[in-house]
Every structure is written in structure tokens, then in C-alpha cells.
Image (cartoon, rainbow, N blue to C red):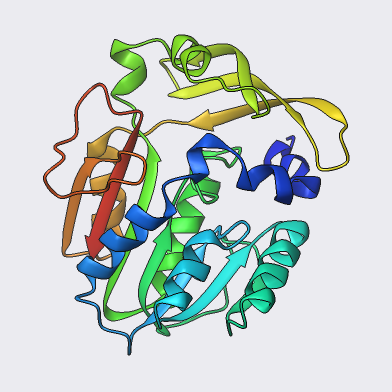
Length: 253
């Protein structure tokens, strides 16, 4: 199967920083800090960290971060940015489905579809959840976002992308949502960091809340809360609705 997500991020670190969906970092980190009661002694794992925007902001605030991503170019960009800010962050090129960490972290974050929901099969996506769970300590917390399966039942994914398209950003076209698999098959068009125009065939998995709750329960989480995920404005007051494109998941072991 095509690993479109790997090809997309091979030479896209600079352009990625300009995407509209990466502009909510400050508000999202504010929420994370609140969720861990501003406890700077905690170890945090950032899964699918990309260019390290959440890791870097958390590190600037005094937290201990490890960031992992499948893309070596994204990790290289994250390392350069952290170095320019004199931040000590452990960035690694790793596959989120097969992490070697065991009971090491107090918190794992996986934001902006940091790997999860992008894999070719449901089994691969589940391996990411399993891997993250292994990395957490006994009473650890897992905060992540994923595509909301309630959205395409009541709305058009094609119209959503068209209405949110911005010049210079990547764009999803030819969307075709499959109700049997809850996958949207589409083409993503973008310009890489060298100015090359590209188009990739891809598909993304949307999840309904009960699926997420069941999977996390099967992994031993004692509590799972799910909310709407507004860009840069995560909140436990934001009840999930059919109009939310993404959902915010907060799970506790």
C-alpha cells in the first residue's frame, strides 16, 4: 500500500509551518499545561511531532520533552529550530507503531493527526495507540486529536476542504468518503520546499467516539473523555458535535 504520508513529509518542513492547521500551537499548549497542572517535573512524549511546534513551545515553558516522527526531514527541521532557541529536546526519527519506550512518560500527546488516522489499515492505527500506551507510566495521561467520524455523516468533507483552502497551503481534492470503512479517499496537492508541485493519492480514517472509547478501554485506560477540537482553543467545555471536523481525546490509565 502507498505510504503517502511519508512521501508528503519528505521535503515539506518549511511549508508545513505555514499551513493554516498549524497555527493554534499557543492555545493548544495552554490547554496541555492546564491538564497536567503546570507540573514541570513530568516527562512528555510528543508523537508525530512534525517540526516540533508543540514540543518546542512546551520546552520553552520549562518541560522535559521527547519528540518522535517518521519523517527525518521534519525531525531535522525540529532539531534546527530547537537549537536556534537553545532548547534541549530529544528529537528522534521513530515509527509510532513500534516505539521502544516502556513506562517512561507521564504524558503522551499526539496532535494534528500525528500519525494516527493516517495509516493504511485500522490495525496499523491501533498499533500506534498500543505503542503510546506502553510508553506511559501507570497513571499516565494520553491527549490526542483525530478526525471526527460524525462530521462526514452530516457534512461534506469535499466542501469542508474547499471552504478552508488557502493560497500557498496544501489542498485536498477529489474527496470520496466511504461509509463502510469510514475512510476518505482523496488527492492532496501541495508545493514542496524546493518549489515542486506534487499530487498524492491518500486516504484518512475517521473515527466515531464509541470506537475510540472501546479501543482505549481495551488498552487499559480507566477514563476517556472526548470533546470537540477547535484549532488553538481546546477546552473541556467544548462538547463534541457533528460540526466538529476533529475531536479531542483525553485518556487516563
